[in-house]
Image (cartoon, rainbow, N blue to C red; front, side):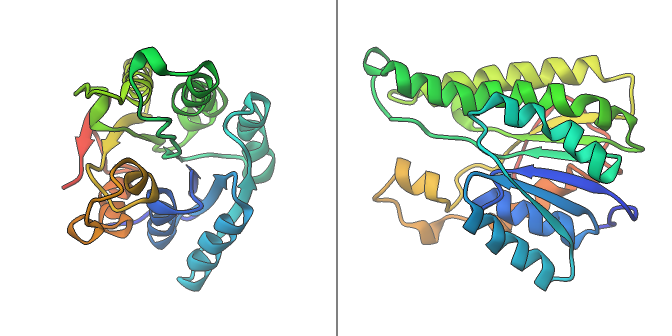
Length: 235
């Protein structure tokens, strides 16, 4: 797999662990300087250590995706620091409580909507101009099969991911005449903490780990990727 041009800047959300951390490490391996975000400072530092141990470069941006003003500042911050943004990987997401739709509590609903949907919209707003200006801007949003396959008790997660997919694919149509390419990545079942919370009795050894799916995600961020507005599964 060919890598990125010198000076490429990539932003990865939810990069303190799991798929986000693995994707950040893979993007750095391919030559991008990676700005990594999450709420957990310690987790970000571990990802940063792994990137630097592999010879890459990272910048830590701790933030809470529930705080809209923090997301809005990302674009200006990256422009002031690097003058560009080439890649956006929005991996961060929350499961919420698995409960009947009629039992979803207002605070739980607001939390899932904030992270899974509103944060996607705000990231698009703050990153759009920089990504359009990039020589080969790429944006990838991590999604979930529940967005297209409803399942009992998964209403909050499924509804917000479905809305995110609609939003992202609409954006993809709007940027189709530009150099920017926007896609969604569905990794399928992966041995992550979120997966363990949803299926506590599942044998994690039967699932691929985050490092196994990261190369497929990273490939969607390369200048050679020509697809736009697609939902692409792990292969």
